[in-house]
Image (tube, rainbow, N blue to C red; front, side):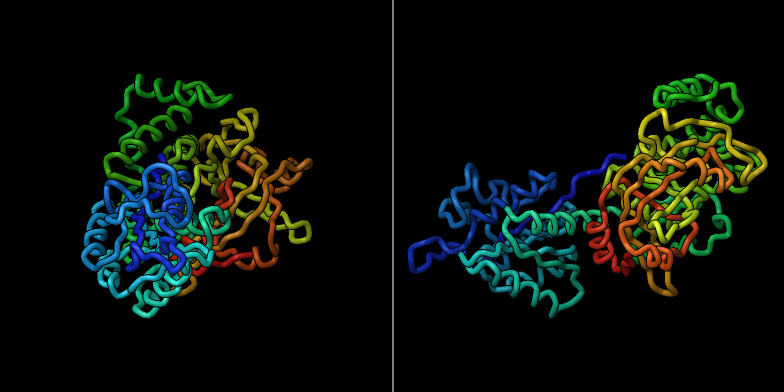
Length: 475
């Protein structure tokens, strides 16, 4: 999966285009508005402007400039409706309004209600052009009407903190827009009896816009049996080129994983899946083999597939993937050493290649006889050092919450001692130094699974919670 750019409508909105102040300056800060748009473009955001010509071409020669395209300025009801039509056709993730001075907000209200997209109002914090007035007025208008997802940011395009707030909100809106078109594949039924992970079809449609496709784990074995020896050899050689060690293709579990890998890819295409989960225990792990290699390779390719078809975990990882290309790992919190502020995680077998520091730390080995009688291959890997973010969607009665925490994975000098004490030496494992209060972290845990992404996503996830109306729980 390749992340697409965030896509916004960029509206320069004021009812006072062309105003000259008493000292002869063009009053609205049109130059600043253009710098704001270019800043977002430079950070990888696709900006949809009202006109093809845009606001300013060439160099921007200050905050208050006369040389701008007045047609780009949305300063009437008619223009507001036309702008909204263009933004809707472009399927924007959110609308960024940059008011270069004050404006008559009642020109815009009906069009903004009709657009039905999150809105960010951004204004500079200088006195020129009375920059903040448009922000105050629009924020008050949106609050008074209600029903809008919106945010105000006060700071110039050169203010790193202000720009970060803008980008975090835009990225959260991208997540919201993508979710409403996403399809989740549920391979199997109740995940290991884990009530906190249950899929809630109607609620997911209502809350996130996500549609679920219900499939069976064993369909992977049926579809997998259809692939030829040549198909298996091609898949095997591809995976062999990505890892340091792998057993021969004639190994029973390797061949079965190649079949599941190819079948899984086929089902993703056949059903238009954007993310999924596969319940290995006990359907596959008793009757065929555990699909750890297949899922690990798909995770390595950027596609989110959760262990034990655990839906809320898959959704959490999918949100992380929409925000970051960093390695994502799903595992159990096996222990929290509260005195040392260390969380230790392990998984029963699946981990992406990027989870390990190098291929020397990533081996495909015979899995332990942990859950299931058929056996399989697991990933023997230790999490690489690096800053990361924890995330987990849960439910408190009728309310969705998201546990968010941060930390830093590190290599334990005596890591094997803890893996041995756990009882399994060949499972994916990570030791993470927690940044926050370890007792709060423990108190917030509501599932056996937790999810980490090697990126600093806390602020972005907090914005996601706002736009999705999820309560954040931090530590």
